[in-house]
Structure formats: C-alpha cells, structure tokens
Image (cartoon, rainbow, N blue to C red):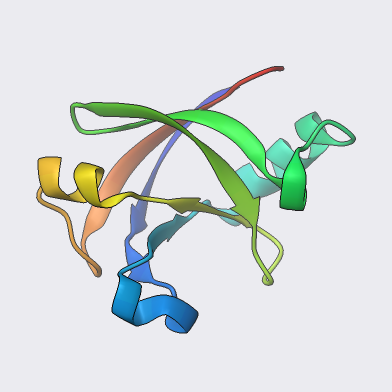
Length: 99
C-alpha cells in the first residue's frame, strides 16, 4: 500500500523542548492501514513504513495516536533537508513495509 497526503507538522506537547515533530496520518488512511496491518503490527502498535517527503526518503514506523489514527515522526535531518518546521504543510508519501 502506498498513499500520499498533505499534513501539517506539529510538536508533541509532552516533549516540546526536544522538538519531537510529527504529522498526523489522515483518518481514512489510518483506518485502511489498521485493516491491512491487523495482527501484524509491531511494538506499541507501530507499523513499519518507507516515507518520502520532498527529495528525502527514509525508513521509520508510524504509531497509533490517542485519537485513533496514526502519527509519523519527522526527524530533524528530514526537516532540515526539506526546510520544514512545526506549522508547515508537507506532502507525505508512505509505503507499508512487510505486507
């Protein structure tokens, strides 16, 4: 499964001083991922993905959020390479791995 969406970057309230930055995976896409990954997710309910933002590609995991969808951490190196910060909108492509 490969999906593309736009999302705003946001800081995790619990760790704002550490600049943990995420994007939220849209609800409809999150529901599809939950169906596909049922019984196959990893620690903390995470799902392994390959992500593309701009010209940057990396492997990571998406994690379930308290709101029911998934969140994607966007590491500092990606934000720097793509000139992104909290509040900016990014076009994100994710591909599920291991499915």
